[in-house]
Image (cartoon, rainbow, N blue to C red):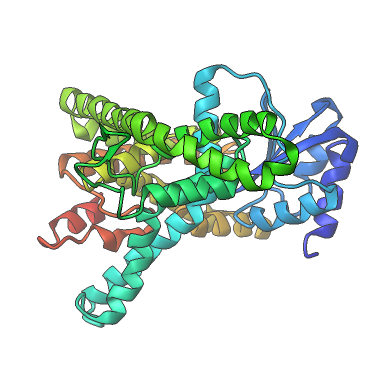
Length: 423
């Protein structure tokens, strides 16, 4: 176990195994639910090698360690004798509960989404250099990484949500596969029990499957109560799917579509009222604040809805990249300025991470301690977002950071790409 000694210290400093009720993770943070947060020795944890910072709030005790958090978390769960579904329910208002569900469910999906975005960027660079043709079989095969990840997004979301909504993850995935199958996905003139079904494209969307997975948890619980235990293995799975599929087709599919359309209308209102440029500039300036508050992923559903309904994102992916590179630039400036070896390692590492699209190490490792980088990023990010908005920059692939820049090249030319470079 590579992180055994590190995790042993973490367990000791948070008050021991008996003080840990649950532990999950996001992109760079271990998020503990502690019985008594007062027992945690934050200063000792901050002094550990490999710990960037500690954030303690009413919801969770968070230890920022970096992008290798997934490996650390897996070993930590093993040492605690827990599994990834050991989460403690805390009373939350409905809005916060929904936002937390979306954020926590999206976190595991970021790896395949980022892989798809990075592959799109690499292919764009190769085609730009004339090393590969968009018509070649090699290009088509590797481009499938991008297209398949987004097409089958409901399947990823079903697995991720099921763990948090008390549903069988394999039945949830089975339902998602059924929805994106060629017999249902986007098909017109379908009917069930003699009633006409609306034509809904379930691929690349996830609101319907989230609602269906939530409902499945209750259906599964109910069927286990009414069906004799010795018949559970045979009858519960088929009963759950037989109930959930029609309800999803008649109810959750249309509701999910309405939610997506509603989000699009709200975004259109802001863009048409205040101007596209104002939204990009504002988000590019304040993104580090949102990350600090743990709300960095709350716009991902909006981004996915843009791609589904419009085919491109006119706001957020460009703002992500502009803010990320602004953060990287601020860290690079501090890297050259400081003479302390340890500080150089911190600023160099956070700079590299930021320009590749992960700014949490910089936000928690430097911005909390230093004010000037924050101010620089607000100014730089805001001005870059303003320019991108005025130039009407559009993102066609969900890829942020330096490697995402080539994805702004379009079939119509390089104007969109040059505008993004300028921003």
